[in-house]
Length: 422
Image (cartoon, rainbow, N blue to C red):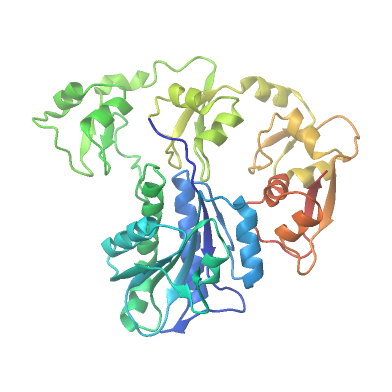
C-alpha cells in the first residue's frame, strides 16, 4: 500500500535581484536558476509532493535572509529536502551535485544519474569542506541548513559554449531528472510531465503510460486482465507506451460509473491539489476518498475527475439567499470581509470553507450583521519586511501568516496588507 508522504521540499533559486551569479554566453545564472526552481516547484506540486519556493521572481535574497527563510518554512526537520539550484562557471563541462557532510550520497547520485539520462554530461557527486574547518560544509546553503537534507545542483557551465546551448534548450529536462529522483527517493509514484489526454480518443479506451501493466490497468478500470486481452485480441501480456487499449464495449459508455452514490458530485483536480486537501474540503478521510474513487495511490493529475459528496444543499442555500457575492479577480477573504463590514472567520464559517483560497466565480454568502473584525489585526508591509520578520514580531509562524492571507509564495510588496491572526 502507498505510504503517506513524509518528505517535503524547499526549492531554492540561487542568486537573484542585484546578484546575477555567474555570467556567460549571453546568459545570467539568476535567470536560469529561477527557471529551474519554478519548473521544479510546479512538477513537485503536480506529483503531490509538498514544496515551497525561496523566491519566485527576480528579487534579491541576501545570505542571512535566505537561510532564515529556508529554516522558517518547514522548521529544522531532517525529513525536509532542500534543493539549491545553480549554474557553474570556470570553463568545465557537465553537471555535478554537492551534498552535505551529514547526508548520504543517495539522493544526489540518483539526481545526477537522471540528469545524465536526459543528455547532460555527468561530472560527479561530492562533498566540499570548509578549508578553515574541515568538519563543516564549504557552501553556506548546505552548512547553515542542518539538519535538512541539502543538495546543491550545478546543471552545467555557463561559460562553456556547449553547455550554454544545452542550458538554453534542455534545462527543464535536467530539472525533471532531479524531480524524478526526489519522487523515487520519497517513495512517491512518479509520472512524466505533460501527460495529455486527447479528447478525440473514445472514452472506452486507455493509452498505455510508462510503468503500466495489464494488471494495474485492469484494477484501475475495475475489469479483468482476460477481458482486456479479449477486447484487444492480445496474445501476450506485453504492452508498449502509447498503445491504445479498449477497456469496455462501446455500449458500456452509458453507465461508466454505475456505483456512484446518488448524493455525490464531480470535482476536477486543480494544480496544487492533494488527496488530503480535497478530502478535508469534503469532510472525508483520504482512505474514504480513495475508496470512493477506486484509487490505488495518492497521485493525482490536473484535470482528473473525482467523485465527492454532493454540496447541493449549500448551493441551494446560496441561490435562495440574496446576500451573495461572486468572487472577482484580485479578491481575498480579507478584502471581501472589509467590503461588507464583517470578518474573515464569519465568512469561513458561513460558507463552510476549508481554505481561504478563492477562485474567480466562487459564490460566497455574506453575513447579515455588522460585526467588527475583532479576531485579527492588519499590517501594512514596509520596506525591508519579510514574512519571517513579520511572523516573528507577532509571535506566529510563517505558515500561520501565509495561511491567514492565502499566500502561495514568500514574496511581499510594499503597501500590501496582511491579516495578523490573534
